Structures are given as structure tokens and as C-alpha cells.
Length: 432
Image (cartoon, rainbow, N blue to C red; front, side, top):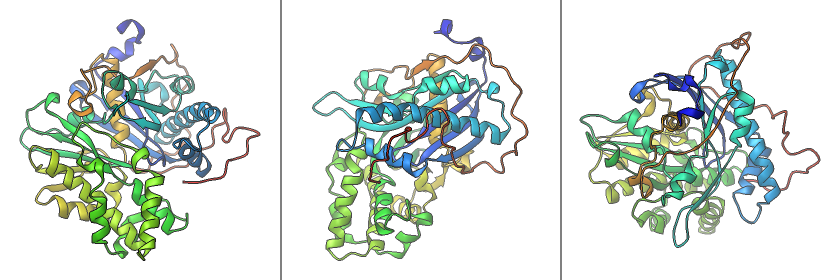
């Protein structure tokens, strides 16, 4: 592998950018980190770049077989490549970081379909063409991480346990690293067990069902429950919560993964309509599905972990929902619930940071899936490597205001090279 990598990637300390968009399809999380030997990570910059509403609708349309078209899939792959590259360029400018100082990019892309193996072989598809990212930034790019694990017999998810091990393991405490994005996933880290002792899997729905219920309750005016305020105004319906806890996915033993195909728009709309027919108020529906996410996590710990953790480390958008965090703290007692921010990893940035770590391992030739988590037959090196330019020239970014604080939200400019929607194409009706 060393023959195809530039010499700069053989140094002990690398600066790596991580790019990520989760199953909620909210936008691009971009992080720039410094990774020292043994995987020690320092976050240098981070920002979230929300998708324009029209782009988000097209992504969600492609996630459903009844609205997906092959020509849209092809165009969206390249359009998202431009958007991901633009996110990194914007972050570097805002943070006064020279693109030339970044050695490597790790891009997860945008999942539009994830089909874990059941009776048929598994398959998974992420968009955001890495060749575009490498061409626009000039930086060697590692992307398309999940297919190699699927090819090795795994589910292709979860992949973040490898990074969780480097970021959060402890010599004495048993920790559960709980990410709550669109889907929720846990990594169980026992002291002195090594990568082979990791247990990890998708616990079930995270924010996905909550977000759709909020969209329905607000008639499209809100995309998520800001501050958990709508759920806090509602009352949990015990009967509906009990029915939801009987979902068959929750009983399946790990390794397992799930996605929008199981808990997406169709599922959430059916749930919402059924609840309204029972006379439930919108706030009560949001309160109930928020409590459901917390209960699925606690139930998964009781069913599938060898022991209850001493600490639970939260990340993802759900960590910013106080009502959800309160439910979790009650359901997971006596475990101490903490945010990843306390460990120097912004809760919103953790997934992007994780794919920077995965890319770092890939260029080192290190197996970076966790077979005990994905079910793969063996450890494999994940991702495809797209070379950057051999020489990069130009001064560092200057003439821009530096970042004010570690976490920021910014608006992505529509990419110039591939406008969205494509020129001459009328946007298709429909929404999230």
C-alpha cells in the first residue's frame, strides 16, 4: 500500500478531515482533527452545514423505492460530492486552516439504502462521489467504508466502534458509548478487553421517528424537537409505548443493524396516523416516541450486554434533546450519563471524527471493522482510496474571520459545478 500513498501519510502525526451525513439527512458534519500515534485525537475544527430543503427532499425521495430514479441517483452522487467538498473548504476557510495542511479526508457519504443480510446477501449504498472530493480539495480521500465489511459477510454497520475504542476506552470503568442519530447505536467497552471484546449494534430508532412526528405535528414548520420542548409538553401513552416495545427488531440478537428501511417515513406516518385515530394529541405522540427511543436503548442494554455499564457516553443529535436525555438518565440508572463533550469530542462532531479515525487506520493498512459488532467473517481494511493531487500550491486561507467557538452551524452554498436541482429539471413534489 505504501507505493500508492504520498510520503506525507507515513509520518507519525496526521491531520485528517472527517465528513459525515447520517440517516436523518440533515446536512454535512465536517471535522478536522489531529491524530497522533496510538490514535490519540485532538479536534481542531468542526461545523455542521445543513442541506438546503430541496436537496434534502431529493435525498429522502431516493431512500424510497417508489420515488427513486436511477438518473437522479447518478446525479445526486456527484452533486453530493460537490456539497461534501464545499463543506470542507468552507470549514477550512472559517477556521483559518490551510487545505494544504490536511493530509487525508475520510468521507462516510450519505446513505440512501442499507439492506443488512437476512435471507439474501446484504447490500449498502452511500452517495457523495469521493473522486469529486479529492479533485476539488486536492486531498487524498478515503470513502465507501461499508461495502468491504458487507463483502466479508458483515452487516456493514456499526463501523464507529473502532473509533469509540480509541476515543473512550478506560482501564477500570465499563463504558457504553451511545450515539443517537437517526438510528441509535451502542458500543460496549469493557476494561482491558481490546478490540476483540467489543459488543456493538444498532439499538433501534434514534431521532428518526421523533423528527417525523414533529414534522407532522408542526405541519412541516419544524424538522426536529428543539430543546425537547414539544415532548416535554406531552404525556407518554403507556399503551402505545408497550405496543412499540414489541417491535420485532428489538428482540433480534446482535450483530444487527437497521435504518430508514425499517424505522423511516412509512413506519412513522403509520404510527402517527394510528395514534391520532386513538385521539392522542400531537404533543403526546412526540412524548411517547421520545420515551420509546430511551426505552429501546435501556432494553437493549438489559437484553444484550454482559453487564450494565458504569458510564454511558452520549453523542449525536439526541444528546441535545434534554427530554430524551432525562428519560435515558432515568431508564439507565444507576449508570452515570455523560456527554462526549466532556471528553473533548463535541457530541455533534463524534461521527465525523470517527470517520477521520477510520480513514487514518485505512491508510496505515490496519483492519478497522470490528467483526464482533458487524458479524463479518474477519477483520478487513475498509474503504476505497482516491489519490489527491501530487503537489498543492497556494497560500493558507486568510482574509476570513476565525471560528468563534468549537461548534457552529453554517449554510452550504449551492455547489457551482453541479447546481441542484440540475439545470432544466423541475423539482419533483413530495417531502420528508
